[in-house]
Image 1: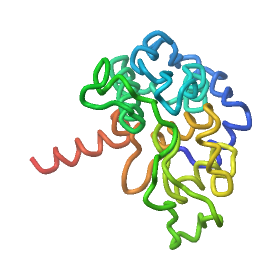
Image 2 (image 1 turned 180 degrees about the vertical axis):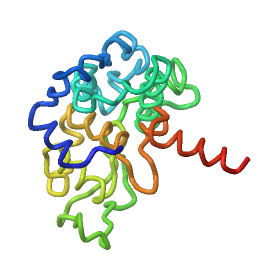
Image 3 (image 1 turned 180 degrees about the horizontal axis):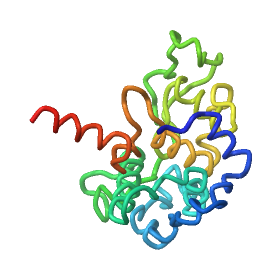
Length: 219
């Protein structure tokens, strides 16, 4: 089941901590218990190098704080599945923001989270045919943040869900570390019918069983 914008807004208003209440919430495992600060920094070994435009922007603390607004992230399935989802998410944001090259120090995969916004975009990523999330004059909806959120039809609903004006102030995704990580998690957790969310695919919840049933019906 995907998060609705209203549900995410409610989470934002309560500072993303309402999930700590109730019997179900007590079963949740803090993401910090599955990925430590040392491990996070070793994965993104060069994110704070002087050569990286995003130096000192993507902090472990912002990542952990952002996950509190998405209690199902890294908390669905058994321990192996939870770790696999977190690893997939970190791998994806590393790919989206990498500053590595073939002969880079420590290899090309050690330079994730090096960029916080797209360099030299070919357009302003405005889909003028989308009337639900109309572009604001003079604004660019280029890739920003850990998952390089792009297009007005993503900035608009992400902002509504998380409590900022994504159409009038898309720049905040590259200026606020916490909001940046929240947009990445929002994109990861949100279903786009008929496509499932990345979370549902990785955690084998809504999507996996349906696919298994489909395969079984064809045998």
